[in-house]
Image 1 (cartoon, rainbow, N blue to C red):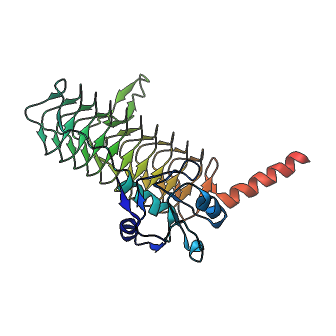
Image 2: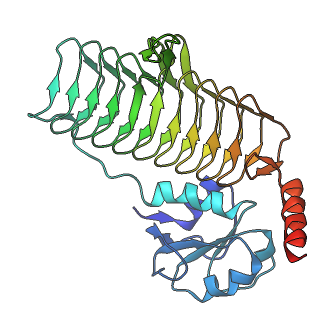
Image 3: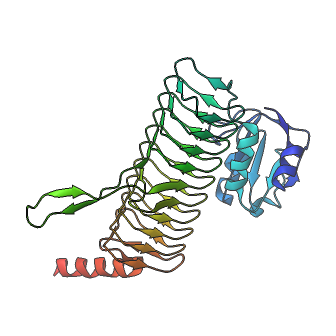
Length: 330
């Protein structure tokens, strides 16, 4: 899709330097850019490479404000963010024909909004509500009374258990399982055998959430598992029953979250973090890759990084490693 540099500058509220009539057709990296592409740089050391590339225009930060170049520049406060927003305009999602594939099974009591797509071999059970513009990919299984909001993208082979609710603009990648039973059992102290604890709660996923491939999110045991607005969950993440995840939380791949965990707004969890039950992770806390958080632990401190097992503030963790290194040398 062609856009003039002037249109893009207005959309991004960017300071335009250069020919406003230049037309852009896509985005690219500096190395792969060709004519018509837009690229970005976040620091001054890469500005020269961007200006020497084949790209037609460059998004850059304030450091480029005094640059004199034949190549047009868009000056913004956050180049990466502006580039991501520009990409949505220059490379919009491919439009698909809406409708239900002949091999899909849609219960007569399901309600599909306008321009909904249900692809091959998908199953949509009774009482399901799917909002306008949403797509259910091939082979999906959407359980009874599930609610899916507007403009959602449910990729192939996703399973959504009965009663789950998804907000608007939710993206669920292939193979994810939403609303399955939690891992809850009661041990008979007499026989030593385990019996299943009721798993009759619900799962609610708010607007603008993205869930990675083969991720699993359990419904509540008796109450609710909640994923807040804007949460981004990577591939192969597990969220246990009754967990409450706040807004704009980021969780990287292979992280495991036990039941009844609270993660407050803006927290970030690195890859392979292990979170035991009843943990509370405060707003804005950063948890480093492969950290382990034991049961009932509370991590507090916006912007504070925690590392290691058991997880502790990074400065403390590094001091302990240095002490161990000194002892080893002795």
